[in-house]
Length: 422
Ligand SMILES: Cc1cc2nc3c(=O)[nH]c(=O)nc-3n(C[C@H](O)[C@H](O)[C@H](O)COP(=O)(O)OP(=O)(O)OC[C@H]3O[C@@H](n4cnc5c(N)ncnc54)[C@H](O)[C@@H]3O)c2cc1C
Image 1: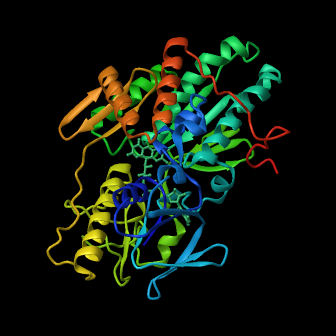
Image 2 (image 1 turned 135 degrees about the horizontal axis):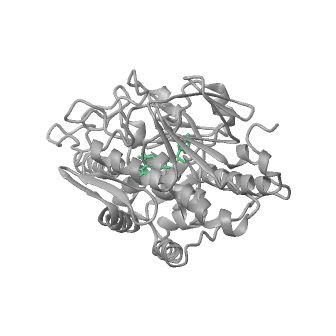
């Protein structure tokens, strides 16, 4: 069988099948798994990329039945039970689990797509880190009157990614600008823009209000009910006509399924792959879709949220389903097998040191309690003992010494080009 994607869903599925009587081939364009919840800490110079990524081959070292191939999948031949690869090869399957996740969605806005910076994967996190550090260098090299666009950072999207990054960026600026860039007199201006009227729309409104208050205490300008229209030159233009001079637009306002989803039936609004109550793709024998790419409809009639718990739970569920079919009955579907049920364990997000919001059912936490809950959950789910140790070390270092050590503009003999400066 083939698992497409070594993200949260695919990896969990493979772990459940490890050591069982099934040949498993994992395909991924990257040779590592990324722990996305901590990407913003790589982008804000707190952690190294290798602290939150884990090589797939190492995860299955010594496995008798799980193999890995680094390859990009460009499509499926569902009737022929084949996966089509970018290099022209094909791979055959008896069972297929599509766990390819999502990519950034710019809603067709070309200027924003071309010029904005994303925070969806490790390359984007590094590009954002390099860009922000470079802005500090450039601002420090200019007269005060010319520093504004370099030191103004606009972040679009008031969901967990946007607020976590805004908080972390505000702390980075507070820690480094005054002591290390005394020539930057005005400090940084950080603007967080959300189209809806509140932050964290998926959370209870009281938690969105708490996040707003906390961000404002950190000096972030929070703009709700406002939409960014375009990015022209150094101008971030709002739908209202307002213009903010800035070199930086961070886009965390939307995602859409990876392109391979289009080879199957998709849901009309979300473009996620259609699946039935057993995570099976209709009219594609032996094929399943799980996680963010799958438009699984939950008990409330809405599609499941694009967060890691549904992906992981579906990964384990589909592994069980496949094992049951192939090893016990050999049939394509067992009418007695229970459908997938999502267990919602809650959601959380941090807003700088010592502050977080968390909700689980009717329970809601803020402040230091929410923050500790966030730390424990993230260390628990991080893959690899070394990574856990390094992340804990990085957090402790930052907590005790107020330091962001990973301030390296890496990867180029010359300074990397700023987006849009072609
Ligand atoms: C910045 C950020 C912060 C987040 N924070 C949280 C959080 O705090 N809590 C939470 O629960 N969720 C969080 N999420 C959401 C969470 O990451 C996703 O819900 C989860 O990763 C979905 O798992 P998945 O298995 O569906 O896809 P992914 O984990 O995205 O994995 C998809 C895999 O497929 C591979 N792939 C995709 N297309 C192809 C192709 N064509 N060929 C080969 N390989 C391919 C990718 O390289 C990737 O490895 C965050 C996401 C981001 C971007």
